[in-house]
Image (cartoon, rainbow, N blue to C red; front, side):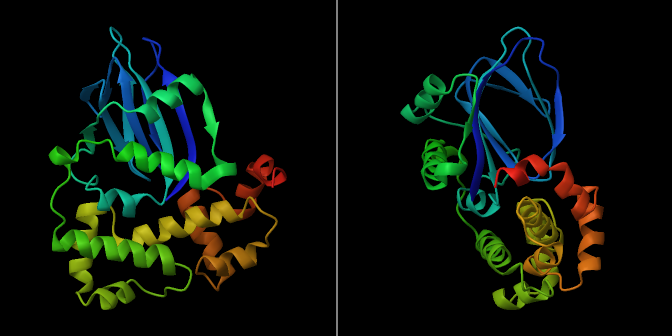
Length: 254
């Protein structure tokens, strides 16, 4: 789990609907007011999770607009699965806590830069997650859940040298078809798509550094740079070189 941003927002009544697909997960903790996430109405002391690569739409209630604290998180599926948060619509109740109060009072209407103290902010997010009402929302971890958690762990740690998803199935001693079915059920995508998504996410991070594309290609599991460039363009919408140029500000901050 890697935290990219944490923030707090007080929404205006006329804030437009937001429809996005992100390459990171987002956790929202509603502090006051009401709003809608994919058509479901939520209120204070509730929250919701949006997964990486998921299309979503959320907006405040115009009569009683919400405010919320939020965190952007990369590589969060393994953590969310262990907390039982990948089931259903991923909405939850939570208990008021001092961590949220501190974020709101200190960073009102601001986005927090977390890059300089990643371990601290990871701890903050774990504290926030620990205040979810798990008696109501955490299921018993099934055999399926254990398999999926182990599959996520394997892919997240060995993505750079994997040649086939069959390796994961063999590691778990289950069939590839069974792995695909339970993985899609719990994570929302196939193991193969998750592997590609994870590789592209890592490649985008590396492209903001002064590293040759050929090295990045092999670092994320593609010995053939041309194949890497084709897959990157298909999933990101631009070539690796174009992505690097479009993110030159991040590059020069390194």
